[in-house]
Amino acid sequence: MSEALELVSATKSFGGWLKRYRHQSRTLGCEMIFAIYLPPQAQDGTVPLLWWLSGLTCTDENFMQKAGAHRVAAELGMAIVCPDTSPRGTELPGEDESYDFGSGAGFYINATREPWSRHYHMYDYVTRELPELVQANFPLNGQESISGHSMGGHGAFICALKNPGRYASVSAFAPIANPVNCPWGEKAFSGYLGEDRDQWKNWDTVELIRAHGFDQGLLVDQGDADNFLKDGQLRPEALEEACAAAGVQLTLRLQPGYDHSYFFIATFIEDHLRYHARHLGV
Amino acid sequence: MSEALELVSATKSFGGWLKRYRHQSRTLGCEMIFAIYLPPQAQDGTVPLLWWLSGLTCTDENFMQKAGAHRVAAELGMAIVCPDTSPRGTELPGEDESYDFGSGAGFYINATREPWSRHYHMYDYVTRELPELVQANFPLNGQESISGHSMGGHGAFICALKNPGRYASVSAFAPIANPVNCPWGEKAFSGYLGEDRDQWKNWDTVELIRAHGFDQGLLVDQGDADNFLKDGQLRPEALEEACAAAGVQLTLRLQPGYDHSYFFIATFIEDHLRYHARHLGV
Image (cartoon, rainbow over all chains, first blue to last red; front, side, top):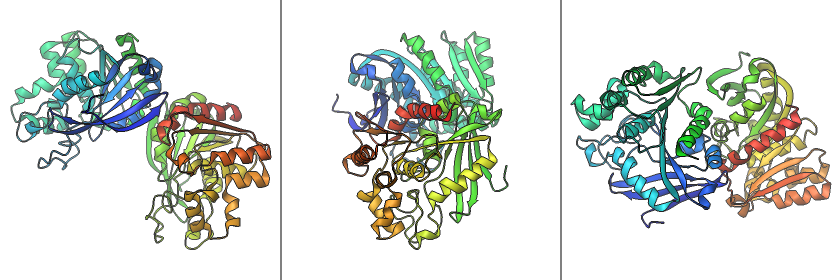
C-alpha cells in the first residue's frame, strides 16, 4: 500500500470490503477522498474494475450506500471505484455557491478558464491519476469498464469516447448526453471553459460521436418520469440521433415511471453490472 | 385514501412504489412522516406487511435508501413500513440536545415521566395508531411481521413479546437486547420512565423473556466487529442466557467482520425477508 493513501474507513459488505481513502492529488492540487469496493475474490487474486462516476452534489459515498451494487459485484468478482465529483476545499471564490457549479459539480472535464483551471481537472484525475493509483495499490487485473449517473453518465461517456478501446464497456443512467445544449452544461462549460463554444465540443457526448464515432456499444437506462428529462437537461433524443447518424450501437431503454433517483439506479444496476461483467470476461 | 394522509413523495422502485406520507398523530400529538414500500403485487391484490423499526438518529428514510430491501420485497410481494424513530418538533426542552435521547431516539416505549409523557408514546404509535392507519389505507392482507436494527431491534422484540402471536415472525439486526443494563438504555429509560427500575423491565427484551417466555422464534444477526457490541450496548449474551433459561428458540448468528452499519444490514436483509415471507405464507 502506497504511503500516499490514508485509509479513512473499512467496512465489510457482502463478504468483501468497502474502503475509503484520502490522498493528495497532484492533478487537482487538493486532498481527495475516493471509495473502492473490493469483492471477496480480491482476497485471493486480481479482479476487473468498474468505474462509477456520480452526479451533481454527490461524493464517493452516494453510490456505495444507495445503489445496492455490492451484492452483485461480490457475486461477479468485480471491484468498483467511486471518485468524488469535484476538487474539494480549493477556496476558489464561488466554489460552494451553487449545487451545479464548483464543489460537487466538476463535470469530469479539464477547466481552461481561470481560476477554475488551477484545480478543476477532473478528466485527468479520473482517467490518469486515480487509475494509476488504484492499479498500483489494489489487486486489479487491469481490465476496466465505466458507468455513471447524470453528470457522471456524461463523464463515463466522454472518458470512453476520448479513449476508444480503453474500457471494455460503457453504460450510463440518465446521462447529460448533450451538455453544450442544456442549462446545466451551458453554465458549467462557460464557467470552466469560457465562451468559445467550439472548445465545449471536446467534452460533449453527442458532439464527440458526431466527430469521431465509436466502435463500442453504449447502454443507457432513462426513467420517463425523470424531471430533468422533462426540463431538457438530459437530451437522450440528441444522443439517439447522433448514434443513428454515426452508426454507433446504442441501447437506450426508456423505463416507465422511474425518476432520476438512486431508487431508479438500484432497480437497474444489476443489469448494468452483468453487462459489464460479460465485457470484462468474468 | 384517508384525508388524514398527505402524500410527501412517490418513487418507483423495483416495479413497486416507495411512498412517504405525513399525518397528524393523535398518539404522539405531533405531525409524523412514515414510509411504505408497496411491491408490484399490491397493484392487483393485498399483500402482507413487514414492520421495520430503525435505530438511533434515523428517520423513515435510512432503511428505504440503504438496506437494498426493495428488490427482495418486490420479488416476494411484501410491503414494508418504516415509521420515524420518535415524535418530531414537540418543542420539549432538550429534545434535540443528544443523539441518544429525545428526537430520533424514542426507544419504542411509552414515556411516563413529564414532560416526555406528553408526546413520547412510540410503542402505542407503532403497535396501534400506525397499524390502523396503514391497514385502512393500503392493500394489506392483515398479516404482519416485524424487524429492526439496534434501538429498532429492541423495538421489534418488545412489540412482539408484549403481543404474542400478533406478528407472524420477528427478527433483529444488532438489537439493544437488554437496555436496562446498558448506557443507552439507562439514559433513555431514566429520562422517559423515571428512576423506578421495576418499571423499566416492562420495556426490556431480556426481562420480558424472563417474565413471560415467548412461543415464537427469534432471529438475530450481530456483527462481531460492531463497536457498540464491544461497548456493551447490545448484550446478545444476556439475550442468549434468557432464551436458554426460558426455552425460547433463538437463532443468533455472529457475523465475522461486520460492524453496526447499513452495509451489515444490506448484506443479510435478504435472509431476513425470506424468513419473514415463510412465516407470512408468501
